[in-house]
Length: 476
Image (tube, rainbow, N blue to C red; front, top):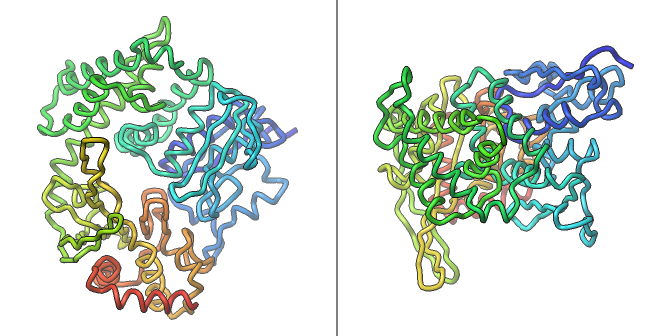
């Protein structure tokens, strides 16, 4: 047996699925699946993925994983290895992949039954694909289900994945602190499971909402931590908590449910756990309405007409595409927000390294529920497959390389020989580098050329040109 500890390699901002992967390996893995775990687990947070690539930019992770002498190393969400689902067109995340590997999860066939409903959860990608799992320990079911949902579908406000993002924002240089914060919740769920339906109906959820509202009001007033915040810094969370308190709508492991679990541990004072994430939210919102607002003023706006189809009817709406040079993490959210004066249907952001990210915005849709009509904001990501393909085509041409097949142009990872752009099809984001992919080389396509490609993709007046170009790209 090896005397070395098992080494987990992951990125500097491990997301909720990465963190659950690490927790599961530390607490459940065996020598058969993760050699060295009996001696302990070490974690290496890497900033730059170039250390995992050869001189041609190809990932070395699959090769390393095939070597028996490297069996005491695992790569979490890195390099296309066995615990990295990105670009593989599979309905999994790091946590479900390792859960199956170490025997905590079993993937069910289409007609296969779980031991009981308490052991079963289902995930889907919002596009018709779904997968069912049986969980060995029903106490872990909600945790697996929420983590998989937040990783595959994206985090909703104040969900577990969103809370992890907030903690990383508050502690950008301390991933271990964020990990310890998450592990406290994971540990209590592992030991006790989530609240039962009866517990929630006894008022634990509403009671936790009241406590969190009190904590929110106290932020900036604690002795030694006094601070004047922007008038809107507490607004979003306050409105959400009040709504949930007055009309409880239980969501597994959202901020209220997770806090209720932590606050109801007998004999322990765990008030600091929800307070950490509440302070992080207030700090981020304060930054958003001050620093981010100033950054948004730098944006150049491009007029477009977008086509919105609603059943058998359709309408054309005048909107803006925003292009901005900024290192602010949230400037695209500010520019696309419905109530902050821009309401961009798409934001093209370039950072100081020259990397570019393209984020689709939203559109308004009326949804009738009985006698009531509600206005919903839905993602206007329909043009993004074309934008992804056309941008990648331009990248190949800028580098004098042959343009690959249509499938490679619209796949998440793209072709094996060109990794400048990652297309996160679940959200419609087109990313030339990111916080977790800071080492990606900047695009060689000019910023204004990218804006023109995006304009063509979104503008209803360019529908004819776009259709002809799409046919040309699909013939490759």
